[in-house]
Image (tube, rainbow, N blue to C red; front, side, top):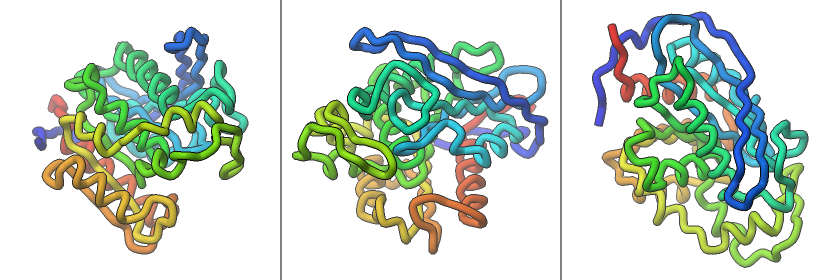
Length: 269
């Protein structure tokens, strides 16, 4: 459903501030999440976007997105998933103990923290994820107790094929792309079927991908679109783009998601 919009063209000055979240996960571990907020300067409350990085990524991976969207009136929060990268600032897990499911716990804790901010309009929370972050964001948005709380879901090349890629792999530390996939990770994804779960999110979805992506193929994206239903998905396929955007491809991706956010945000004029 497309909502009425207003003030979408206004530009704001942006300030950045640390955002730290402490919580206890379902296994009793004390987790300290390190993140940052991009805040538009202005009066009143603003919609918010919580950004989820990809495999071996960091909360600093989306400067173009956070800067552009905050300048258009969105509070943006990006953070390091705990234990999920080399050189991460969040604390409480290791390469042996993180998984997409622990990342879901992290994201849920961040959602609660952002929703509680005085300057955030908690009725207008958006999730965004890139690659593995798209998998985590889509699974989190589909949780039953999140229904009605997430105004929209946007993703770059969502890596929904991760579980099937690792199904049957030995439960041991395995090097991948400069980091590790550990035993807890493989255990967590063995029985996970994202395509059966993600339709639990009842809202609209924006997907931006490239037609030359070797990791998240057209087949993966097509399965995601079918799972959600074509009437709910705003799909943009960028010719010549791979797994990661830069230059004109990045500008197009940032603007496509911004248009989706604006179309699903109600602002006071």
